[in-house]
Image (cartoon, rainbow, N blue to C red):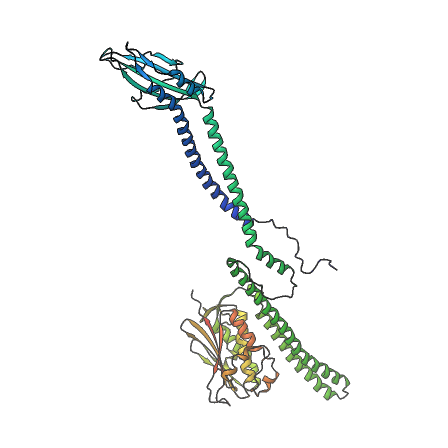
Length: 526
């Protein structure tokens, strides 16, 4: 005995696919990271620009103080007022590399300033790199340079001071302040590090929120999954969609629809088995009684009568068994793929069915007639007419008269059941006519009999399994199993056809009605 629970699913060897959490993270994280990276870059650039402006402004303060202290002495020379206090203020920033420089160049009367000419250092260190281009007077400029192998940031301001002692002469004063770029680089690096830490925290928080949000959203589905795993195999109740996310409700509804269809199929199969068992029990009991009677009988004549009764009962039982097998085949969807539909001739198939049932109609003293789709009318004389090459399956060598897309064997079974049903319910001496014709885009096969007919309110119920018409008074009807029309409709619908029942309106019918069974199929258009 297998120790596993019957509801335990077998282990699967299929590789696990990405779940909703992983898919959402794979979809959202790249976009979030890209947006955060762009936002961080913009913030970094803005903070870096603000740092540069702040550092440049502090570097410009001693330059402006020195510029305000430039004066021309009484002897015409240029001097700096209070240079030591400005130098002390500049040194108080505790930067490692700090440099001040004040240089002057003489501009003779009527000459232009040569920025490349040597200058005289009034204060500070000589040799600080000059600006690449001469800045306008009074306008500070900032630039990066290298001094004594150290990267420095330089603020420079040039102004012109006029010599009152020597009219027409002037002095060009270049004031520079430089400091190492180390603190700037360190501040920028710290800013970048803070931005990266903030973005990393943001990505982690978003990932956790997505993970927890999906887990919370899928919790009803987990409960649904557990309830399904804990169900027994015979539990076909619909799934409970309460609490399921709105987007998943259509999926649950589709599963419930499938469960309901499976439940109906199981119920129909169970009912079919029960009905089949009941229908077979009676003839088998009769056969057993008749066989026992024949065994006990000593009179050869009576024994022969019993054997004839057994043979007749065996024939009816065989017919019932064939109908049960046909019904099982007609109502099984897996049988659809067994034979592919093809273009067949409805006219030829109907003619083959009429030829097949002519002997039975003669035996019952019934007139079985035939109206060909080409306008030919025939009766019993057609029994020996096989000149058109029609075989027993209804396929002809000539081009089809009424081409339809269907399974030839199943279409033959439909018409055979309709004709057999008409023969069974038509009294001796009655008339049965099979007509095939074209109606617009449809091919129509009609079986019309002079039997008792079926009341309109009972025409739907006669297609049910094991249904017999209680108003039918013929002996054949009493011996039938009530499966002919059920089989006919099942095969017809599977081939895209439909069967309609109408009153035949035949005056020769005992009830003045009769029955007209009409089979309609769409014509095949090549």
